[in-house]
Length: 572
Image 1 (cartoon, rainbow, N blue to C red):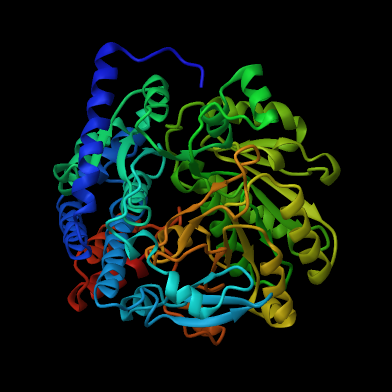
Image 2: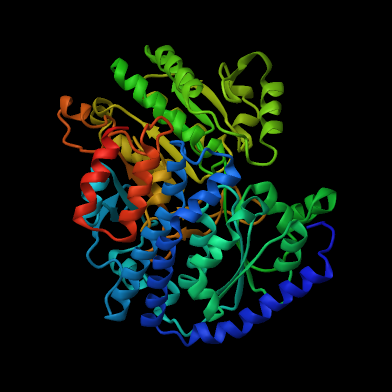
């Protein structure tokens, strides 16, 4: 990676941090499972104690009003998944302590292709109440047996004394739970002590992260560093660092692994990386939303348009799994009505600053590239329609990481369209992190097993039916990452997984399902789901309160907290 060198003071700080971790590895190796679980419980208590500070710091750097409803996003994607992840990981360790597998008590099933599945949501009574109507399964690769899943679950915690050196985590700059969750996965799943280097965008969270991770920092198992690309380059190439994990874009990944410019491109072509050590990653991509044709009511069209707008505009569009292309059937009679509702949903969503570096330039580039078929919508958003499938351009082959959404039309009835959409998503779109499908229950019934076969054909790490793949991110027991099989020179959406609190060995994908109709309207369609409009919707009116209550509940689950959560969520 070509960059100016860090200052002498920065070099000294990095060297000292790495040396601390070299010594800390022995201390971590001496921690048995009970001690590691106790450390998780202390981190959980610290997260709960500093959750409000965490959210204030996040909203400050993202330029959000402290009393606005968008603050709910920061509760739900900041402290909340860390708290749930800590609890789930502690439960897995507790199982291992008494010679049980972390998957004991979870239901197994089957999926197309002879795949074994593990149902990870709902699991507890709290899941059944708070996420009623949502489910998630982890699909293992074909040929992996239930017995193998059970025996291998636990990863490095099966042999906690066998540590794996010093690892670097290059923290994300968008979703604030990512750096902390990545550190925990490196420590507990991979048995590495960790140098966390913050993205400069998140430097305002340094004190909060230091407080949250204090038990692990005091032990010597974690160090946190700040700085720019110069610090990152020196750190990842440090001779005493044995592994690097990063979250970001494929372009950033290639710059780190192969270097920049013509020399970097030549190294990539020759498969001779500049960074000669193992690298895992979680990167972005196009993340399509495939809308299956069916007979929808006007309320369905409006609600699912808000759903797609959320998949694009959550966190301003700065998500690795933000939907970038909506795939619809050109033969769907309701296509134009749906697109009208989608345009309105994009325009009506709350305005927010373009806080992520380079966003405005990427928006301008989209407008320039697509000329007459791209329209600017309120709040700096862009909607691209009328794409030529034969020459769709960068909307399908690059990640904008900005509030840019494209619509691709493919012909056919529901079966023909689904087959074409799956083929296009697999063969034409960049990235394999997540794919969304939206289908009316009547369409799901008509397709029958063909829908599961289509899901099996999609080569994506998380696939969501009538839900956003972000639900997979929020499910602590589910793995999160690209579809397996990528290499350094064709990294797509990354290598390896994170989260994965059940510590499953070699999962293939996560499949999430949600309700097409929210409560109470679901009851009119014969569905018993209790879930109203989810609080992560950008149109949710009480998201800030609901998000705070959910994080508080995750810190200390209890029956007495449920009425306030339900009351707030139903007002959304």
